[in-house]
Length: 202
Image (cartoon, rainbow, N blue to C red; front, side, top):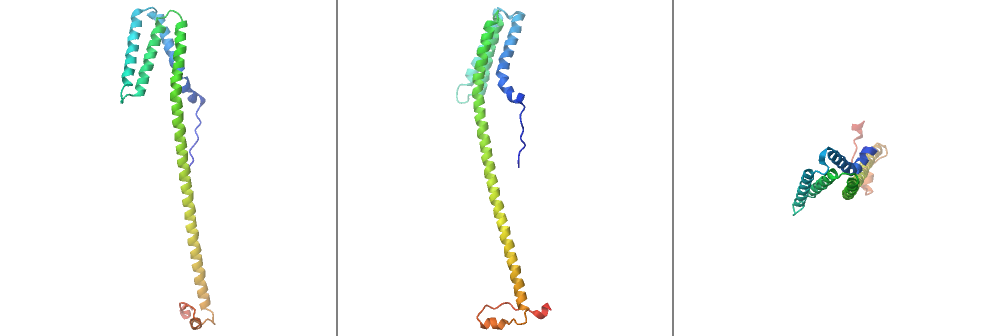
């Protein structure tokens, strides 16, 4: 059965590509708002962000150690650590050049990490689509073979039934002929045919 083709809107297709830039831009905007509201040259606020960033990095390191390490949790923790460090520096600095430089580096790093996962997801998607296509082709081939086999069996059965009907009609017609003599056939050595009671038919 054919599946409907669903075309994704270009906004839905491009939204994941814009997510890293949106994330770093949001962090930069919030850090600059925080800067304007008293975080500029604030040692306490900078120390707070340093502690939070170090804690997130430690959590990421713990999540990536050992056989039971989870790469997703570790990646999320390291991303949070970088975002906190970026926000702390952008909130503490008194000008835009350093925050913009950090924003550029953070955005490039985010796209570099995201591209790795995008390639992996694309490979998995292509492999799954190829597997599904092969299974469909295999099932379609089996269905075609079974359809041909069933059609052949039906045609053979019809041919046999038609032959049996024609043979029975020929035997009845020959037995009804006035010159038909079954004894003459037996004397000639031909196999005997079943006798037909013509009186009963009449």
